[in-house]
Length: 70
Image (cartoon, rainbow, N blue to C red; front, top):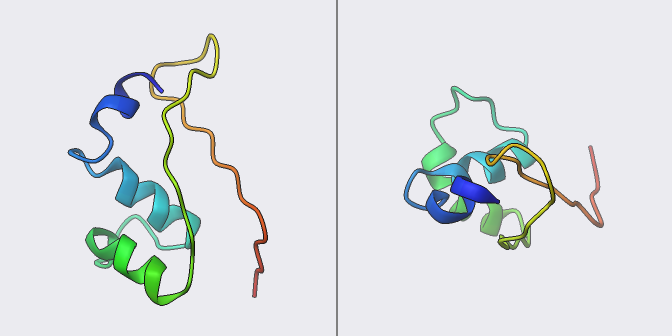
């Protein structure tokens, strides 16, 4: 939502969020390739812009379904 919704692809927020969901550390060199890694692992994802209410403009809601943790 907010500024994240407008700049997430250009600033790499989408890659960082996806990498975080997959368990990559903030120092992982694979972050720029997060979409390719997700595809290799069969992870389906979707980014949608939403208004979440009166939260900080850089708030992100992450919803996970069918997650299998090893």
